[in-house]
Structure formats: C-alpha cells, structure tokens
Length: 366
Image (cartoon, rainbow, N blue to C red; front, side):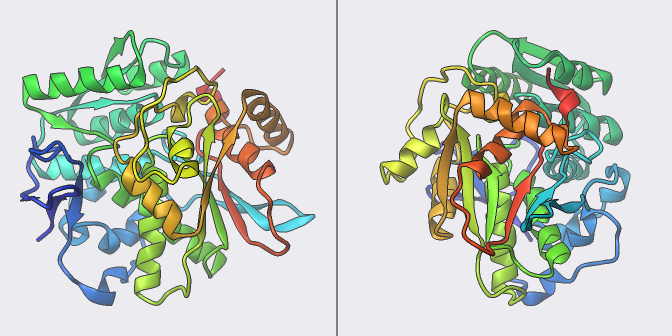
C-alpha cells in the first residue's frame, strides 16, 4: 500500500482526503512499496495511462477511465532539419492545452477514489484550468484561487468548466495562502499541483514518452521551472527508467527561469540547498513566476544530481523566442516561449540530443 511520507521528518501518513502536508509543515512525498522491475510493465493504452503501473499506487488508480480526457502521447518533432538532434515535444496538444493535464488527471483520479465531493486549487492559470476540467469530468465541485491579474483567457477557460474562480489581489504566494485557508476552513481536498505528490506522478509520463519516442534517453532535457512539478516529474521518470535498466544514464536537466523572478537560479548559483524567497519583479512568464517554491530543496537536488544547471532569461528574449516559434508553426503562450529562449542561451554540444517542451498553447495568453 502506498502512503505519504514527510520529506523533512519522515513521518508516515495514510492517504486521506484532507491530508496535504505534514504536521511539521513539511511537504509530502509518496512512500511506495518495493515492487521491482514489474512496475514498468506498460500497457497498450493510447494515452499516458499506459504507464499507470509506474505511478504511485498505480494499480490502485482503477478509476482513471472515468476521469481521463485522452491526455498524453504528445508529438515529439525535430525543430530544425539543420539541427536534427534538437526536438520539441508539443505538450500544448492536450485536452486543456497545457502539460498540466498529466498531473491533474492523476490527482483528480485519486480524489474521486477517495470520495471527494469538493476540491480547492490555486494556480497561475494552467494548473487551475486542468484541475477544473478533470474535476468537471469526475463530477467534483471545484474552486480555483488565482491572481486577479491572471490572463483573462485562462480565467474564461476555468469558468467554462464550471469551477468557481476566486480572484485574489496579491502575490502568487498570497493566492496560495488564501486557498490553504479555505481548505482548512472547509475541510476539503486540496488539489495542489505543488503539495500533492500525485501531481508529479502524472508528470513522470512526460519522461516515459520521450524515452519511447526516441528509443533512448536524450542527453539533455530543458524544463521551465516555477514550482518545479515538471522538473520533478522528469527527474523521477528518468530515474525510474535508470533503476529498471531501460536506460544507462540520467539525462541532464537544464531548468529555465525568468530573470525577474528566479529564486531557484539564485540558490543554484550560490550553492544553497534551499531557495530563499525573492520579490517577483513582474515577468511575462506568469506561469513560472514563483517567488517562494515550496519544493525548492527537492528541485535543486534533482538538477544537481543530473549535472544540470539553471539558466535565466530576460523579457525581450522571451518575446523574441515566441515570435521565432510562431514563424516555425508553433504558437505557444508567452510563458512557454521561455523554454526556447533558454535553449538559445544554452551552449549545446555537437550531436547533443536535446528535448524542449512546448508547454502551453498560444491562445491562452495575449
């Protein structure tokens, strides 16, 4: 049986509807039973659920067919024929047009199996949209806390799925605090893509798909990082492939942050184990503008363990990258453009196989 375990004090908890952090305030991970190589026995499902046995409590997530919207199995394409070893993975070809569907589908499946009737989420936009959509699919009431300055197009998408939007004047951290207060007051399920480890169990499938599409591990995976759910998904996914001898080495994780909100980059450069909160100076990359990431210790450890790095990108470079991508046929939201901007600033070696995610569709932002 899978349980929660605190990443700080190692306290173990049953997976219950209202449990989302440790009593010491530490973030929770999954304490999984030792299952050996059979946990990578994949099925022929034409979606990310072919990897269900590799998710935490995967074989227990039997209710996924009533929750799925067909997420996963996104295309992996060569970006430029002149550089045939650089690939883009089109994560915006998802039901709600962003990679957050991977984690949301798993998290809402868990909630449904726990008998949850209402959930609360907080988001800069895409995670809230994904959770709202899957909650609607599962018949679960949903409130989504967002910044009052979130892209109107993302707010419209959340509302279209029937979720209640709770717009908060304040920072991303104040939005999260408001949601957490409501969770405690109402004693309902906290559908947090940051605190609930089931979310990055879904994000692991991004790594599995890359492996199957390339028939090997890439040398380098570029990943945008705000709260770090995709970084952790990539890390845990490839680590599982390594541990089960499907690959012979870990890819290097190169994470990308906006210069105007880069707590992880600062901590990485200063060789600090935990990121100190910074002031968000305002960035076009709203989706990764996280001034105080709750899982910074785990994110930094993952990047360092792979021999990776964190790059920062300026505002002008983000816009230039979005324009370049659009002229190649890839219309992405502004936040997602930071990935290609980071790639342009990365010193790629000859024949180095690099994968860049295109995380969100262009129609999500102005």
